[in-house]
Every structure is written in C-alpha cells, then in structure tokens.
Image (cartoon, rainbow, N blue to C red; front, side, top):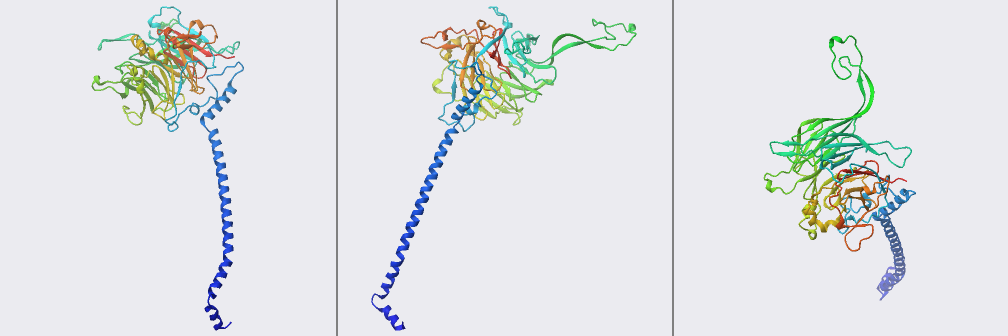
Length: 568
C-alpha cells in the first residue's frame, strides 16, 4: 500500500474509529474471564479461611473447658478420692498426694482473683467429712474440781513427733514420748507415756514495779535436734529458758578420790591407781537449764519463735519484739517497737509473732486490730516499717460494738511450705497467700452461731479468749478449738469441715468420734446440740498436730486428749 493510500485510509470518515473498535472487541473478553477467575480464587480463599478460623475457635473452646481450674480440680479430686479410698470406705486427711490448695482454691496468687469471684467460705458444721478419728489416750485427773495450777496452757510436738510437751499454769513442763508400735496391734500407733516432768518457772515478784510474775508457761518451742539430746524453749510472762533434755543409762564407777556415795577419800589412804569405768544403770531423763534469757521485756511475753537458721529466735510482748542469739543470754536486739511516745495514743498491741519456716530474714506479727505485718530484717535494723500489710476490709453492714474485739488476731502460723499463713480471730480462721495482701484466699467460720451471743460472751469475758490454730503435716487441713470442748477441722482441698468433741464419754479405746452439730434455732434434731446449751467454761484453746502422722493433741482445762485416725 502506498503512502497516499495509507493516508487516504486514515483520512476516510470513520476509518480510525473502526480499527479502534475492532481492537476493543478483541480485548474485552479476556478481561472479563480474568475477573471471574480472580473472583473465584478470592472466594475459595475466603471460604478456606473461615473454615480454618471456625476450627480454631472450636478447638480453643474445648481446650479452655478442659483447662478450667475448677474442672481440673474436680477431676483431680475425683481421681484422688478413687485412689485413696480404703476398703473400709474411709478416706484420710493426711494424703500422700493431696490436691494442691492453690489449684482448687479460688485465688492463690495476685491477679488470679477477679473482683466478681467469691472467696472460699466454709464452716457450716454439717460434719460431711468421711474421715474417721478415734480416741487414743487422755492424760490428767478426772476430778470435777480442777486446781488452777493444773490447767494446761500450751501444747507442742517436736519436729519428729516423737515427743509431745505440755506446759501448765503451775510452771511445770510435762514431756510425753511415743512408744514403738506394737507388732500385735499394727492398726494402733504407739501411745504417748510420760518421759520427763520438771519445774520450768517459779512465781516471782518484781519489787521495783510491785508486780507478781506468774509461773504460767505461755509458750513452748522445740529446737531442731542436732545430737542425742533435745532442746526446748519455755517462757512465762517475763523470762525465757533454754532446757536440755538428755538421757543417761550409765554411771561412772571406780573413782580414785571418791567413795561410791560421793564422799572424798583421805589422800593418804590412796595407795593404788584405778581407771574409772562406766557401768549400766536404769534409764534416767535429765532436764537441765542451759540459758536464762531475762530482763528484756517490760510487758507480758505472748510469743516465741525459733528461726530457720537455728541460731536465733524472737520473743514478742504487747509492744516490742526482740531478737536473741541462743548462745547469748545477757543482751538482745530490739527489731520492732510500736510503743508510742504518749501511751494515751496507743491504739493496738502485738498479739502473736512467728518466723518464716524457710527464710531466716522474714517474720510476721499480728495486732489487736486484725492486721498482719510481714517484715524483712534485711531492709532495716528496726522493722517498724513493714514490708507487707495483710488486712481484710471490714464490711460496713457487719459493723458493731464488738467488731474490733472479735477481729483481734489470737494466733498466726506459717504453713510448712512457707507459701501461706493462717490467722485465727474470735469467730473464724483465715488463710492468706503471702503474694496477696488485700484479702485472705480462704475463710472458715469456726462458730459463727455465736455472733448473736456476743453480748453475753462480753459480760463473762469469754470474748477475750485466745484460740490457737495449727496445720497438718502437708498443709491440706487446718484445726482449731471452740467451746463445749469442740474442735474444728477444715479440709482445704475437699472443702469439708467437721466438728468433733473431746469428752470422757467417748474415751473408750479406739472408739470412733461422731461429728457434732450445733442447732441455732427452730427444730433441733436428735444428734444436735442447741447453741443455748453450750458450756462456755469448757473450751479448747490449745491444739497441736503431729508433723508426720494423723495424730492430734487437744487440751481441755487440765486434760490432754490424743486422737488418731482410724486405721482398718
């Protein structure tokens, strides 16, 4: 085609438009098909994504369900019950593999409790526990009239549980030793018999203050055993003593300068030289005072606690806490002093104190206001400024004239693991996590039915009674006393509680203790006792639990009851 023809074609009317229209018709079809293909791929991807997302959500839902602590705790509880239930149908408080309290409880650690979640409450007294306890022994006279000096004021097992010490208001310390188990009766553990008795404290008189110092033993604490001898600390209101308990079954004979009766010979009559020898003799247990720690407390001593370093211990009175070295008895170091410059400004006093079982620098002390302060001796020499303050906010609806009195803490105990601590006030037992100061993780009502009788309890001074509490060997059960010779046990893992009675009516050998119930009103069942019939003169203030076995000791006035779990 020539130049002119080409130009003519281009210059013809509609020539360029036709060629462009031809190219458009050719290109439209591939674009539309490409769009459909792309839309199809996108749709397939979206459907696949939704399928994967739905599967992931379903898997996460089931995983969340099975990992729920409450479901997991129920499964652990069910499995443990199945494994540990013995042929007789009774389970045990002291388990070899108990459910972890932190796993079953609502809030063991800061951040795991939501404000809407309720705290664990127990204490209905329904006696729903399957555990069976049987009577083992009772120590003390049966007389109706009890001498004031015979009233038991403290009970304490040593670290192995082989020895059990009691102190009374007469200043005496009685130590019981567990006998070896009998092969003829393997179901019955060894009984406790008197091992040693000695007078720890005598009544004294402070002439400068014109005050009589009672001989009553306030506390006994055993030291970890390091050799054949045993050591314990005992204290009255002012003086602490370190006692050595040792055995002697041999005596030396054949002295050169002494006769057999101890008299000295005339030197001129000694003509031969003899070598003294040890001869066997009847076993004799000696209690000798090794140290006397005195003149350090202006007010009455209420607590002593041995440190985990086995070198120091603390003693607490109403306003001060002192730190002692076991080898130095003429001076102590004051670590807490809450005495105000003006005594009229005094608002609270120290009620109990204890060292941490594992950390030698940590201790806690409680107050009459219901607060617990944790102190670290590494922070400052004088621990007036606490490291942590444990306090539960008071419910304004329950505020009354007796609120401050019943909130006063009478005892504080660390768990054996050191993770928790337990406090006892007048109506309840509370378990605190050391990592959470705002409120306790567990609260157990001991005798809440007495809340309506606080006025009469105030008039007869029973509202000021100081109840103690204790842990079992693996921290899964707590125990404390009550009135009418009742004592309460709370199983932390299984949410069970039981009320038992220490009475001579149930003092037949290996007789099973029946759970007791208290009726608060209305119709009273046959096996229940009315709250109006409770004897407030019969009370269990002091309790102790064997560190290794299910053996407990409770003190009722002048009697010491020992119970053990029934073994089939």
